[in-house]
Image (tube, rainbow, N blue to C red; front, top):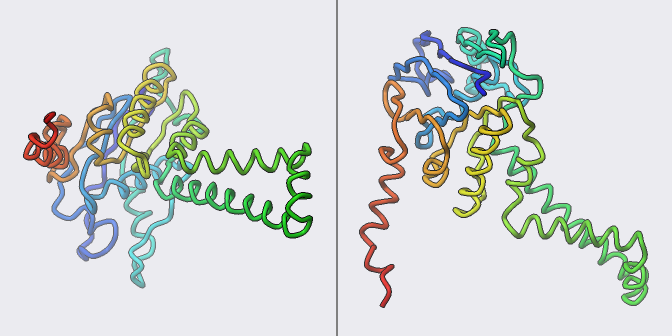
Length: 272
């Protein structure tokens, strides 16, 4: 399903090239973005992936949008002005009628939010461990063990074990996204693979493919992970090019770097 069909960044450029977001878009002449059920904004750090997602979130008034400015006195409001000058077109519903708005629960999910949730889980685990230690001090080791065998004690221990397991097995990000992604919505995801191992990045990409295919979810994803790029059934815009060219995953610089790195060391993987 396609809820956001196209997005056109404003052609306005401020004369002061150091003002955000114009400093990110300097020397760029992007064409209109035309979206599919999954669309990727690829590029190296500083290319503007997160900026463009936030511009879209502002223009569409999505939950998760964040106010942005350059931090330079007198430049506040330029980001919002720029976002207001952008244009977009929505897709059609199942009856072929033009949509009037994006689905209500659509949102922008940033990598910082995911990291924040991971930290909360870690802190929760530490807190539960502290509770157990305090019980041992207050009641004595034997009484603490007896308390943990009660219904309330078992509940506290279960929360502790759950938090520890989620944090240590590297699947926190997958769980966070699973808890927050609903069917029939539009999601802007900023580097959702953060903190995931390559195996879990592949698993995440497979889940996103299935949600787009079977649950009517549209994704616009900022990433430069070769594992995500290789697994997602997506249209890829290369933000490292002047006009944001559409390319295949194996044409991208970051992916070719990984390929060359392992190709030069191919012999080290051969069985001896």
